[in-house]
Amino acid sequence: MIDFNMKKMKAIADRVIVKQDVQKLQTDSGIFLPENEKERPSTGTVVVIGNGLEDSPITLKVDDRIIFNKNSTTKFTFNKEDYLILRESDVLALIK
Image (cartoon, rainbow, N blue to C red; front, side):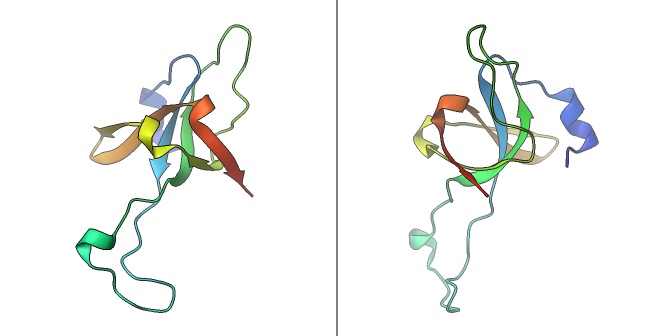
């Protein structure tokens, strides 16, 4: 669901704005991970979409859960929350 503050953000062209999932502090079996073993997941939820390009509209929707190429993102902070901007082509898969 879009937060009221998201209405103040607009993605341009084929870009999407994503709220990245929170990193795990321990494994599923309960083992706590040391700081150097933690890695930010490359999954998240789409919160804003652009209009797409002239010849290819955006196929993602707000609230889609995605897996993305984390090397192709731009991180930014808006209203004290962290977000990522990436191109739709950097989305690798939808999570159903």
